[in-house]
Image (cartoon, rainbow, N blue to C red; front, side, top):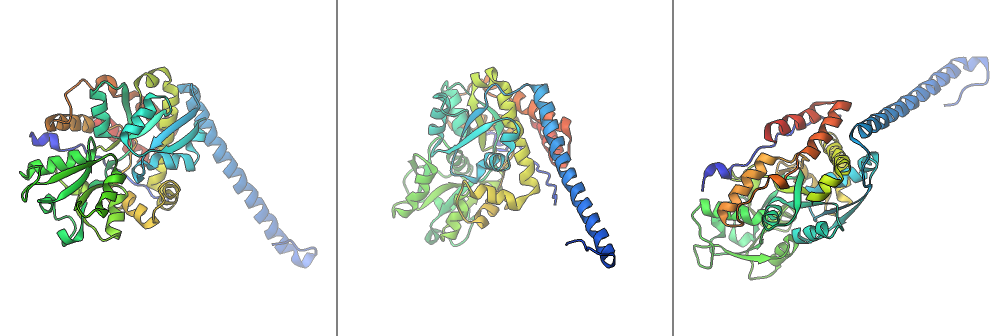
Length: 391
């Protein structure tokens, strides 16, 4: 396989840390003066706060006027049981959807297939879906398009501790083992890439890796409780959960040269909806971009926002989101996804197809441009620089 196809486009994230009573007589005149000053200062601060909020609302209204009001305001977004989809959680909890004139309902699903069905049946307007299943669905004729990003990296495999004495021993420890995975998933494609690079065959036998497929990541991970399953695929936050339960990490994709900076989950919608209601999706994207900015400037509150949707220990969320194993960005990362498409075609996952009509970067560009017009900083500038380089 062409090694260039196994190297995925990098995402550089620039982080910026934002990071009495008055007296009633002359002897208390100084206290009265201080109290009056304090009262005045409080009033000024309140006025400043209101002015800041008003300015923010005014800039949003200006952007909305330039772009156009959302054609549809009641929006349903589907996500999986993963910290990877935190842009939606933060946008909801921090009020960014509301700022954009949207009323959003978030619903958790179990698999990419369920999410695609939700999109095609119009039960969902947007879904966070793995890049590999999205690409295979597109190649099979499903009229869905990618219009933004969600997470880069964040995957790997774990193994029972009796088969590995340390973390990140590599795919060699999977020889002779039964490995639970999910067909048509990023995790499975990554494993096949690494096995091929290591000249390890798939199948039964002491020198091979036997892959046992399950319908969802949740089912694959639960299969570790079965004595016949030795290892399993994971995406965030399952790696952290696995380590806390005594399993060893076979590898993190972020630490594998062939997989580094791999575009994982994408924002997906009906192709026709992106064309017929573009203002709605620009508003959604603006909310995601604002949410990204928040994740880079307020780690503590981001973790609390995520916990409302992914109910695990906050330390696990911190590790998955800020531990260097993944990056949650709204950038469509078209170049990286096209490289991934070529890779899964080489693996035999799907037939090649023309992706251009199923990849919409205009929505993201218009959303980002409108936010930059309101005012920029290092975080927003990093998004602009990345988009310009990898669109």
